Length: 86
Image 1 (cartoon, rainbow, N blue to C red):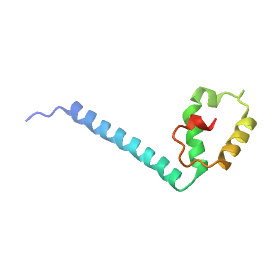
Image 2 (image 1 turned 60 degrees about the vertical axis):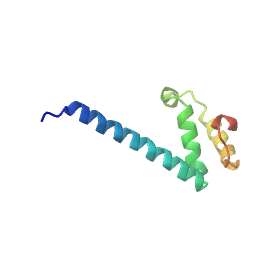
Image 3 (image 1 turned 90 degrees about the vertical axis):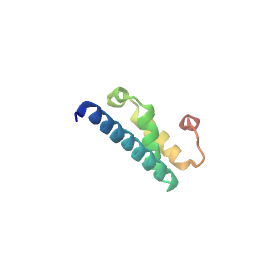
Image 4 (image 1 turned 90 degrees about the horizontal axis):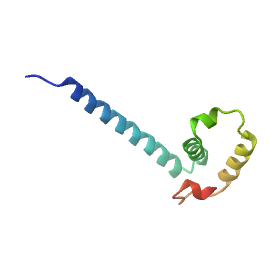
């Protein structure tokens, strides 16, 4: 009996990838449920600021920190779209 190993490996990697995606999502949900606003803010900023921009030294980090502090003071429960915060 011959087994196609590439198909088996592809299926295994797909399962692992989706499992990782589910774990990340559940962590985000857990942070939101606990009211951990800082973790939610990190997620919001990291998902909307491209990697190239995050590495760029010309970003006004003081303004970003100030905006982050303002967001931490707001009630984030029930926010459906992170863009509504800005």
